Length: 316
Image (cartoon, rainbow, N blue to C red; front, side, top):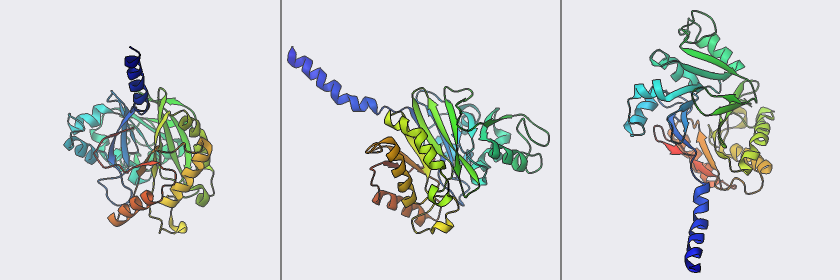
């Protein structure tokens, strides 16, 4: 009898790490690159497991990415149904075209939902895109005739906000993307689980900023408690890119320096096997591969590097 009990105890102990690693979110990349490929620009669908209540983090490419995901059997419904029914809202980190063009172009085919952004980003979208001249104003704020398909919701910084039609919340943080241009990071919570998505950002050292340092301090407790499931962060250029030509972006070396600062706040060894999702790698293809190679070669913290592929789901 004792041996049977011991056997079950051992099985339970062995299974504990697996239970701890249980995925909380499913992610479908609609676009993963920066730069010139208009069919594959930054956009990531994310939803709590067991639901199809997706939000879209940035919206550079929408339709082409959904169609690729459907072709890969990620979705069993049409691309139109994914667009209209599965996507519950858009979160725009900053208003550069490679992060908003999919949202703009697909607006006529979309259904009513909310577009979320920080104040400066929202103002730029209203004044320069959805203004009744560059493009019809599909929103409920801004110049021109308001079609009111989209509800434009301005996000306050560092305040938790409920995400409509989902069980998730968001907290927004400022980032420096070529000082003084502001980008943003979104901390998405679903219950005790969280994921962090950063829009384009340069390193604090080059940007003469403390935005990343402040963000790392804010999320470090979540890493300590094993609640943060992963961080989406850009690496746009290989290490050969000069610091004076980063234009508010990261290289592999700069990313690892920033993650080293995060580890200082979260505790030594806290980032071992922690998932870091690399976004916004810019063409040409040789640079995209070089970024990947450099990150894998110099990974002193032992993070689990994920290089997302358009239209292929992964879980966090």
